[in-house]
Length: 259
Image (cartoon, rainbow, N blue to C red):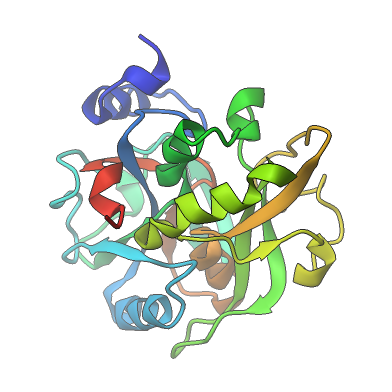
């Protein structure tokens, strides 16, 4: 069975067994999510940060302190992501397939919407998704745009980029605008310098993607934004997915599409 044809429990079982892979194109029709988890004392600041920055940080769920599953999935968020990053005082101290040793009853997990959720809809509308075609991770960039800060949490906007044929940009905007809970419409089209991005072939996260003739870069707000905020704000602990290696939930993409 192809990765696209797997159910979320099947995919999570593979990740739990140690498979490491970006998840773009996996479990077609099922919602993927960013993960960020912080100590309870900082949870309010992170929730307020997300509320003030809904494009990059659309909250799908907030788990109870110490909880490892919830209404969106029956799995275990400590083991069911293909790759995690652990930060201590803003410094990455581990990249691992299991974060059980860092988890405690004090940790609050946030599930943030992911733009992979609307990629199946883009493909169905005839918009090519180049990083899936090329078998690479989506490129993501820190920008010069600042998010609204909240208490101890501050940081830059992070965006993901997909090259889109110029004639299909309007279609890409229309399709993704119907998914506001997973970043929605693009935040920028065209010149990357307007976002403070110097070189598209050197993303801060993920892999470079090769544009085809006639493509233009299209940028969406990205759920890696909280990780950039972790680096800048330096909380004592933060647990997150490795960029592009998402938590695949039991929710359906259509659950987040506006009629």
